[in-house]
Image (cartoon, rainbow, N blue to C red):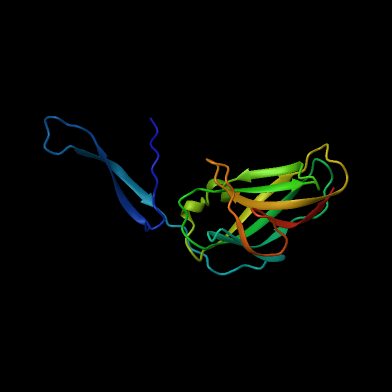
Amino acid sequence: GDLTLAIGVAASGGDVWLPLTWPLYASPEPVVTIGTLRIEARPMRTDVPPMAHRLEVDFAGKAQLLGFDLSTTEVAPGEAVDVTLYWRASSRMDVSYKVFTHVVDQHDNFVGQRDREPGDGSLKTTGWRPGEVLVDRYTVAVAPDAAPGTYLLKVGLYDPRTMERLAVRNADGPSGPDYAVLGSIRV
C-alpha cells in the first residue's frame, strides 16, 4: 500500500535513509533498508515583492497578510478573478490551515468561492517558517447567475478539521473578526 511520511520544517536538504522495520524472527537485525529518500528544502524568501495593494492584517499572531494583487475588479457573470496573496509567517503552525477567498454580496451571500491550502497544497502552513514571505495565487470564479452589482472579496484562514477561523488582530484596513476585505468586485 501507500506510505505517507511527514517531514518537519526543520529538516535540511540531502539524502536521508528510509528504514523499514520488519520482524525477521531468524535475524538479530530486524531492520531492512529499502532505499533512500531525497529531501530538497524550499528556499526561504524573506524579501517582500512588489504588490498592487499593501495591507498589514494579522491572523492570530500566526501569519500576516501583507497585501494582494487582483487581475481585475470587473467581471461578467461566469468569469473569474485572479487573486495573488502575499503572506508573512509570524510563528510555526501545527495546523495545516486552508485559505478562503469569498466573493459575497451585502448580505454575505456567496457568488464566488475558492478554499484550499496555500500553493494548491504545496505551501502547507505547517511548513511556513517565521519571517518567511510566501506568494499564493487563487482563481475565483463568479457564479454564472450572479446579479449585476458590487461584491466584497474576503480572505481568511481556517482549520479544515474544526472549521474554526483565525481571528484578525491589528488589522490595517477593512476587516471582520476573522477575515480581511481585499476590496470590491463589480459584476
